[in-house]
Image 1 (tube, helix red, strand yellow):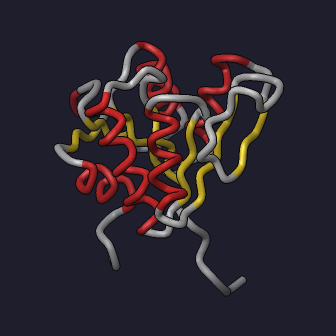
Image 2 (tube, rainbow, N blue to C red; image 1 turned 90 degrees about the vertical axis):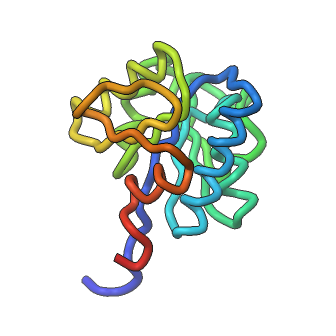
Length: 156
């Protein structure tokens, strides 16, 4: 089957209570994914999730939120699409399985659990100012490097 190539999906994960610096990094990651034609997937709530969705949609891209709740009342306003799961933290598996690659921006133990799940299901993980897990996770120094590691070099 030929036609338009499918977009690459990138899950952007990180804390729901991100500080200003982490929020800014996630916003830029979301923007860069969208500029490269990718789709941002996130947990759909606040912090890094909101920042990445905001960056993507402000750049004219798509952001999909995989919500822990049964409804959309807590959804962040920057999502293009949302999926209400009703499965709480177990939705972390759906967030990482929905993507071709994962970028972790900052993070605590929830982010660490998503990284572990991503590695378990074979998704490459890039960390930006977060967990450094040695050879298992690529470490990026900037949003540009994180997106390049997740999506490959532009035009490549």
